[in-house]
Image (cartoon, rainbow, N blue to C red; front, side, top):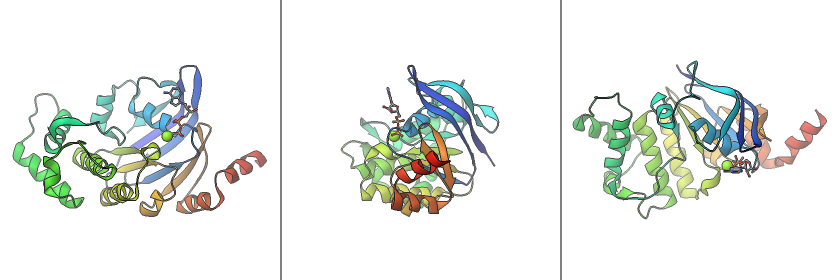
Length: 251
Ligand code: ADP
Ligand code: MG
């Protein structure tokens, strides 16, 4: 059982405060969705947790199983068990998916530890079967001429191979078509529960038709202003975000 705690997090870009006192705790096995209008700081939150150098943490903390991750480099955060889904590589010519994934898995091992090739391929094929991915897929070069759906498939397979404790998926800006949406949803649904906790950022209610979240949070001006279950996402779709704004104004 793992826990990711985001405590009173403040993130700024340059002088501008973007995330303002954000609080959220995610346990293993839970799927949380963060929704909210454009520009409320959803991607900034995800990038700050990933350790992006342009984002300054000006207050608060992010704890993985009680340990602060804020002093860790992005690769250390990944090794500690965080996976950032928007971090799929751009095109890597001549590097097959199988070799790319092998390097990614190798990079997570302790120093001096070698990845056993037989064990690696066994794991790869197990995960591909789980995600219903054709064996031919892994002999293609990474993202070379990939459709949006294929990029997502590569990303989901990478996530399955790395077996993170928590996955942060920022789907807002990726312009997912219906094909890509289904691939993400099928992958997430195949992996959800058990040891994996998921933070899903989206402003499309549509994605949440496929991935039914355990908890839904509305982010507004850098913080969570409302939380609920999956019915909150439906309410947002029906009434829009202005309804939350009005409710806030009257609170
Ligand atoms: P969301 O993902 O909720 O749409 P973002 O986190 O992308 O919101 O953006 C929040 C705010 O931060 C916006 O006002 C945006 O203009 C600003 N912002 C985001 N990234 C940068 C950046 N690299 N430099 C300057 N401002 C940024
Ligand atoms: Mg965004």
